[in-house]
Length: 195
Image (cartoon, rainbow, N blue to C red; front, side):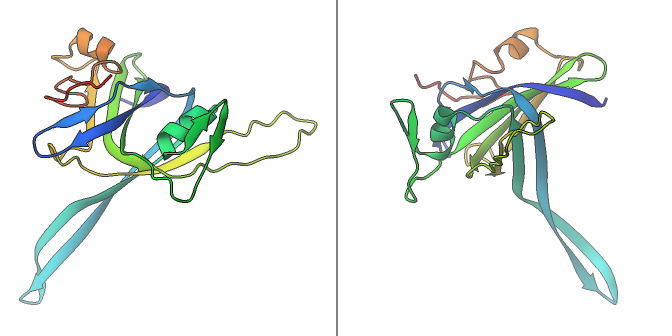
């Protein structure tokens, strides 16, 4: 089923990702979402033997993600990129380290049903910004931010998704997708929300 829209961008900062626990802070809503591009990189190798291909193997590398938002507030930039937000302003230092986060959204399918998505672990880098003068036509300058996502240590997962129109869909899970960090098919089976 084709997707025709997106909404409700969220992020959740990762507190712990180990072999025994996957812990997220409570999800936070981002500014309105314009676009999401997800590009999983796969490395492939072919073993040649007896003058021909004998075996092949592929493995997931990093997942490149770019999101475009109607706005990316200074507070959101500080949280996503590890900068300091104080008194309505932001201080960016070269020594700042972006935290690992989960990124979630929902996509509207052409049948009117929603697909809910969490990318489970990644880091964003400084946003692309374009500043232009106002001319005769109104032109919106929307920020884009790129990230690299990887698999979690806890369960080797990189994405969790559910569809409203799939058999077994739990309406309660859809309603709690962006608030409950313990959902088995969402952010983590045994994750514990951190206040």
